[in-house]
Image (cartoon, rainbow, N blue to C red; front, side):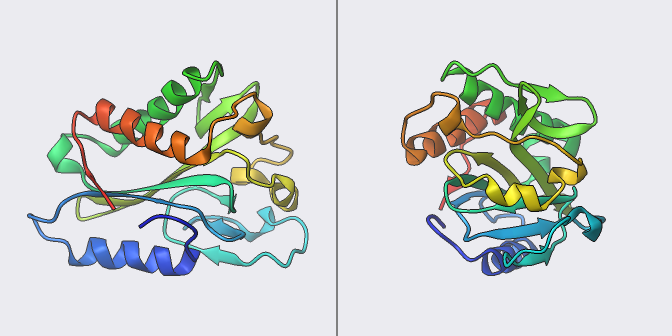
Length: 201
């Protein structure tokens, strides 16, 4: 699955894939972009949508609070059976963050984690968000990286539940390579860290 994809349809497809998979089902990574949408995590609070907007809000079954998805943002969904990689959820999140850190470092961007706030930050501004759902030892949902996405919609929310949290994107940090190049590199970084090569569809 690639290209611009309706959020709800993609979410339903992830749930169907996870529900129907068997012990022999190959793991998959899905790279997509979404039309403008706010998504609210399972325990998310609607008060973090702080201003009215025409952008739809979808409450979903991942962890985390509220975030925004839109064109120009890499969204990488991980549909994995964690037992195959002998990974805990915490370890997988750490690998996802490390893949993002490594990708940004190759373009001269010094990024970092922040304790207690999953995601990746550049000088305090969030550039990548993470959120997963685990069912029967399998995960779905994943991560998003701001490339040249319009940042204005983030003004309508407390990003990831943090009032006043700044957001940034690679386009404002001197990265001029195409989004598709960053997508391929991100998948490569993650696969290398996991020591495996999940099917990319």
